[in-house]
Image (tube, rainbow, N blue to C red; front, side, top):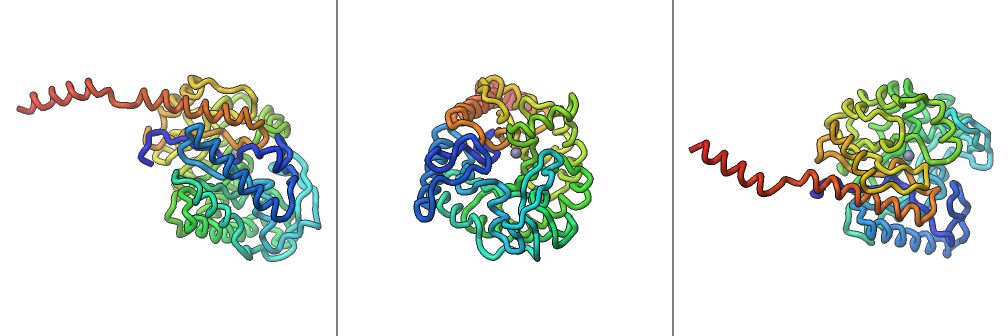
Length: 359
Ligand SMILES: [Zn+2]
């Protein structure tokens, strides 16, 4: 990126009310057949325009073509039976009715590649595409075949890698894997979670990111957060291994939460998408509040590696609130960019002094 502090969003953005019921996860589509295909493309155009108008530098599809960030990918794999549902506890947090793995899972066809090509045609700005991470996928299913979370994750990693390579070929600049499960199953992250992620990015030349957050602003997540104590130190236990991994960018929740920012020291050298906008509240951050979070992160991240971002996706928010938050993100980043810009007159006198003392 040749812009300092390039802004982006973690992933999902609200859908228009004519496409799906707003402010709701897993919201059913309101259109069918060809109308749905065209409707999703129109929604993608709208969300792109909203990001561009807000001055977001790295844009995305806002996940307009998927009902949910994990299930839509899984629906397109073989070996998963969506009729045969079981209730499981997702991320140790809430019960959900999920599909069952009944045979070997594999990717039979491209899943988001046509959508990515469509987005690529609409904009010249860098684009980021989010996929679910292997561990988070495993946690959203009942496994009646492999009977091993690790084995299932490994198979998902292979399928994700096939998809990621085609997304790269379609012109995606950053492929991101969403791994909220990384903040829950800490031992497994270190045992096999990061290895599976590295399998998913194998052979990619585009940049790769992992998004690790404390979830959408839904009640199950906000209730869970209340049990985590006064300081959230989950990142501390996985960062040393992530720092050594081949992943280029780490996307994190840093605003309004209880994450002590000094944990960022553990991933020094990596690029970091710093969540500077809270998605769990309708309050709009002031640009100064965004700037303050970015300044805090700058103590641990070199300026050329800091990417201002949202804490998580904004699908459950109203469209107006999401727009206002994007504007706050851009304005906050601008404040800090101005502070970082070299003060030209001073540079001039410094060089003059250096030249004289060399003579
Ligand atoms: Zn998230």
